[in-house]
Amino acid sequence: MTDFSVRRARTSDVPKILALVEPLVSRRILLGKERVDLYGDVQEFRVAEASDGTLIGAGALHVLWEDLGEVRTLAVGERWLGRGVGHALLDALEADARELGLERLFCLTFEVNFFGRHGFEDMGSDSVDPDVYAELVRSHDEGVAEFLDLARVKQNTLGNTRMLKLL
Ligand SMILES: CC(=O)SCCNC(=O)CCNC(=O)[C@H](O)C(C)(C)COP(=O)(O)OP(=O)(O)OC[C@H]1O[C@@H](n2cnc3c(N)ncnc32)[C@H](O)[C@@H]1OP(=O)(O)O
Image (cartoon, rainbow, N blue to C red; front, side, top):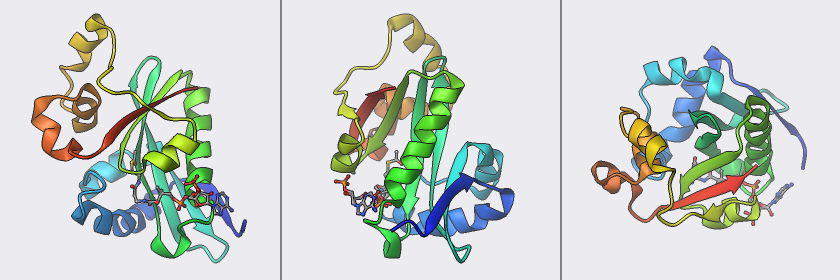
C-alpha cells in the first residue's frame, strides 16, 4: 500500500511526533525527548503522512561524527505497522545520511530483524578509534553515551542491540 508519503518535519508536527512516541517512551522502547528538544531537533526529522494528512510515522537522523550518524526516534503508529512505512522512513534517513557525507549509520534497538533486513548488523562492543572515542566521550548527549556503551546509560540500553550499517 502506498497511500502515504515521507517528507521533512515541520515545527507543527512536533506535538504529533510527541504523541506518537509517548507510548513507546513509557514502555522504554524509545528514549524520551523534551518538547523543547524536539523543536530544536526538528530539522533532523522525517515524517510519514497518510493521504488524509494524518501523521503516521517519524524518524530522525542525528550526526555523531564526520562519517557517523545515528537513526533515532523511529516510530510508526500502531494502525500502520507492517505496511512499509518504517522502511520508507529509514530509506529517507539513509538518503539524508549519504547527502551529508556519512559513511556509517548506527542504531540502538530491540527491532533487530527490521534493521537487519535493512542492512544493519550487530556491532557487538565495537565503537571507534581511541582518538575519536576520547573526543566523543566529552559529549553530554545520551545517544553518544549509548553509542559508546558507557556504564552510565546501561539502564537505557539493557536488552537493546547496537547495530551498524555501512552506507
Ligand atoms: C533507532 C531507533 O529509533 S530504534 C527504535 C525502533 N523503533 C521502535 O522500536 C518503535 C516501535 N516499533 C515501530 O514503530 C515499528 O515496528 C518499526 C519502526 C520498527 C517498523 O515500522 P513498520 O512500519 O512496521 O515497518 P515496515 O512495515 O516497513 O516493515 C515491517 C515489515 O512489514 C513488511 N511489509 C508489509 N508491507 C510492506 C510494504 N508495503 N513495504 C515494505 N514492507 C512491508 C515488511 O516485509 C517488513 O518486514 P521486515 O521487518 O522483515 O523487513
